[in-house]
Length: 324
Image (cartoon, rainbow, N blue to C red; front, side, top):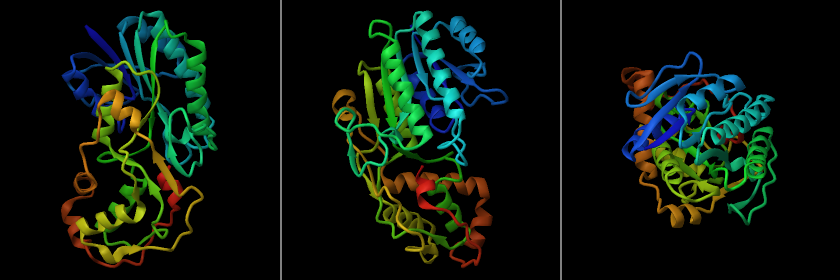
């Protein structure tokens, strides 16, 4: 029996992995943090503070999982790139991995980030592109990967490290780029942007979750980019949102300077060849699902009241922060 422990299971990406894991024949044990409610009824839920080493060890010993999917991390958009809490999660990840190995665990997938690469202008390849992270968040993620690779010998645990690029879709934090544009346009608010020429690799959340499940249930080890492999410009994304909401006049391109990093792209050759994975959701469908989600949050009647209207209010934000 394949028994998997999923951390970050109530999160934006984690909740989308649970159903596919069950379909793959896993007995799913999901971790909810203090005060978090279960989000999937076919998983066995456990409440634990993963920053508490004693709780982590007791949890892993009790479940004795054969597989581990570690997605939990500090992700508050306000400060996660610079927060000292990233250091706590490095230690927590190491402790979790050691407890997993000690309980007989065989195969683990940890969530990394494209920000491990740093400000690279062009395609990021897992082994050819050097990692030079320029944020505390990126540095912490990369440190955890390096320490896991050094501390845990191959015979101890089969480790895959998923470097996630820009994941979007229903349930994404409202402060991020796509939800910000959607909510502004649904309510008729002018939306200041750069010229929109930046390229980035956006992947729909359900596709990303399926990729993680494929990797966990496979044999590939080391870093693997998880992305669509089909980069889009910010202008393409914003204009698709405007087309679907009918609020084209609300887009205000050129009001912010371009960020330093204008091409954040993923080489997805390894994911495609070794796991046979490719994205199933195109931009039009992904944006439609994201809009439907936010309509359910703010209320369709409220959005319809403002669709196409011009408001003088603005939310001032910098594109580089929204991307990250």
